[in-house]
Image (cartoon, rainbow, N blue to C red; front, side, top):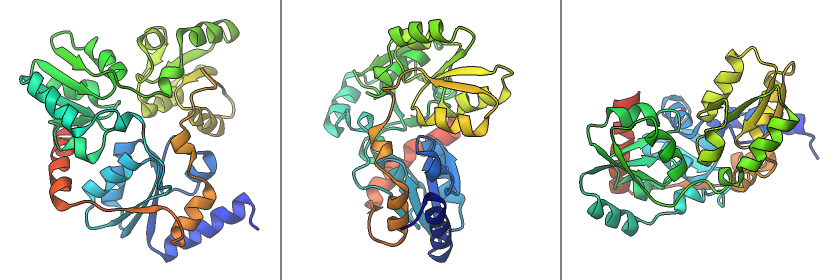
Length: 306
């Protein structure tokens, strides 16, 4: 029987012994991020997978993140820490449905939030992250944009790019959509001197009443640079925990106790330990033709947004 620190030490020994790079999305719990080689957003982690010297990658996140890592690093073995860790948003649109939408909006550039499956990426012109979406959409020459799958993030971008026409599906993150304007009113009353920082996957009534709306990395950067002492965080509540560890002299509160990604929470520290031992997780494999087609949209993202 191990305690947390002992198990973390075992994991650190195993990853060196078996030549693993451990990547943890920022929505993972603190005990997992502490043993990761890199912590960040989905695209940033995939870039780290590409540049890491290790021949094996363990993605502590959800399936589309592991797929993206495999797309960018085909020569490496990529493993997902929990085989059931998916993303509801990534699964809201089928390949055939997207083909139909592209036929309907022939003049539109198809822009995919990176929270999509590899199969959907093969039909898209460019991928975006919440951090890069605005910059990339501004640079796309098309005057029409078919933005999939998150209509909340897409609408947030649309308001800042008035010269383009957007088309959406009724998709989005079901976890962030649990946050309501009532939550905003409640925290404004309860913490009147706190700044409200939210993710643009939230509904419009939330983002337009926040002090800052931006990506997870944007929220973390905002706190780092701010002289404020109190913050309400409107994204996955793991970020509240991470900020409490990073800035113990500041106060952090969740905008909603309901904003918890169940798929992210599937991965435990024991799962990471057992993945390294070969007892659980799943290796991500992909046909070369699928990978090459999906990579074109990611390459376009790098071209437009760096």
